[in-house]
Figure 1 (cartoon, helix red, strand yellow):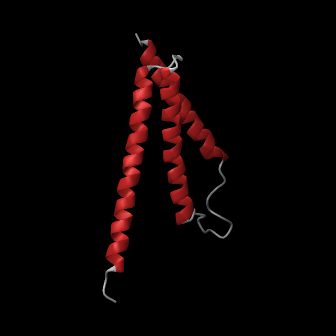
Figure 2 (tube, one colour):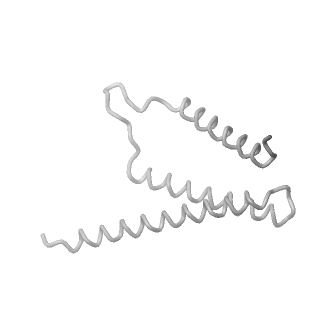
Figure 3 (cartoon, rainbow, N blue to C red):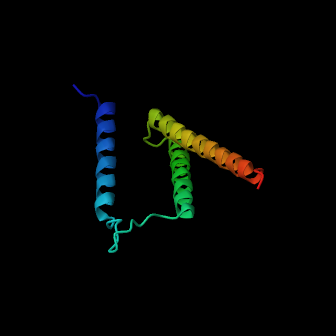
Length: 111
């Protein structure tokens, strides 16, 4: 028998999958008329990644506030959202550090 927590988790996962599927179907084909692939620029990619991390942190803060106010939010969901936000932020910091290191290495190369 499936308990409530697992059932809710399964429903949440199915909802996310359906959302991603709908989003993928609604986006235009990335291959243009000339056969070239339409890719976002580096700046757009970085902006999208930053927005994603920001969204995770905002969601985590909202869930924490809701839990503290006594709303119907499970503690496990709050902790999971906090961990997701933390991991995303740490990954962003590590990528930033690698980019800065690569820039410094290139800057210090003899010409």
